[in-house]
Amino acid sequence: MNEKAKKEAEKSKFEDIVETQETLEQINEEEKVEEVISDADLLILEKDKFLRLFAEFENYKRRTSKERIELYKTANQELMTVLIPILDDFDRAVAEITKVKDKNLLKGVELIQNKFKSTLKQKGLEEIVVKSGDIFNADQHEAITIIPAPTPELKGKIVEVIEKGYKLGDKIIRFPKVITGQ
Image (cartoon, rainbow, N blue to C red; front, side):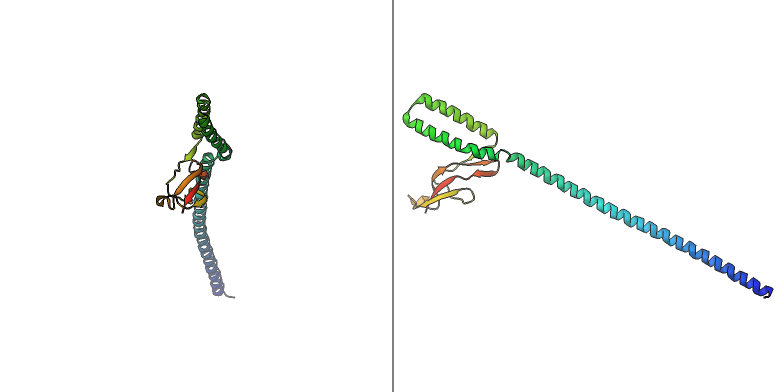
């Protein structure tokens, strides 16, 4: 090989090395760009995951808070359901003592009844006020029987209240039992 050919080969080799180095630099730059892009994508994904987790946690807090409030409102429901028949017994006792006309006995029973009622009222128990002549509502009343209306005004209305109804907070724990007119 002559010297010119050697120089041409070296020049070609040098150009190949430079071209390879430029290609490697370009690949490195592309990888860096891809890393930056992938880091940005990763950051966006992590931020999205964080926001979803935060929203889920907020929903959990709101739901448990609502459940806790609901539980607090109706925590005494079972106890109140057991005590309601005692209120009915007091009403019957007062009615019978009134017939006997023993004022001292009546006064004593009424005092105990009023104290018992006020204690239950403090705990959230409320009597559902229903009287003869009110419009019957199946969502709020329990019809025991239907009788022919004694007067035309009582058609489709409550004729008589058999048993009082009670609610604890907004929830009815015993529906008033009524007789309706047809």
